Amino acid sequence: MPTIILADDHLIVRLGLKTLLTSEPGFMVVGEAINCVAAIEMVRELRPDVLILDLMIPDMNGIQVIGEVKRMLPKTRIIVLSMHADQSYVSEALQKGADGYVVKDSLAHEIVGAIHAVMSGSTYLSEPLKVCELVGSRYSSAADRRDRDTMLTGREKEILSLVARGMANKEIATLLTISIRTVEAHRSRVMRKLNIRSHAGLIHFAMRQNILYLP
Image (tube, rainbow, N blue to C red):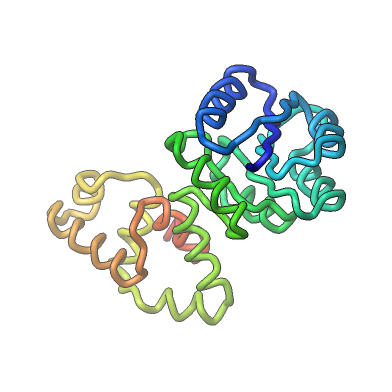
């Protein structure tokens, strides 16, 4: 039976989480903290199996909490629950020792799945983050990035850049004076070549390749 501490300064978030988790067989919420200092003290006293932590919790940096908890109790699993889905936040949290990262606009069942995953020794990432992490881990070296970059034609890079900047297919078609169907075909080809299945993955790849803004 995993014991859980919730660390979030928003009462409504804690209430929602507690209601969800206590309805799950075998889960036990043993404490709630509204700031970083309280979270660390509560973890030290109660030694929970899982800490669910909001990175933006007051009076310290949530990343510091991850490091401190892992220093005290390496076996306590930490799941970050955050509104931030930026790769920089995710990477730093994982590097400091977080075992999972769930974005706050995820479906409710994701946090339950995350707890099961980290308790079994796995790392859990929300669905949009899995694509980004996959792309980042597979193509992190300069050589790999160059190889990946050369897979795309000039037109495909151009359309990727516009897609990543938030433009719709119709807007891209008008800008480039081509048909919407042609834009869709290029976009599908890019995703197939890069083995990317989401818009978030395209944006992340464009940023890593420095082709988000082409001349």
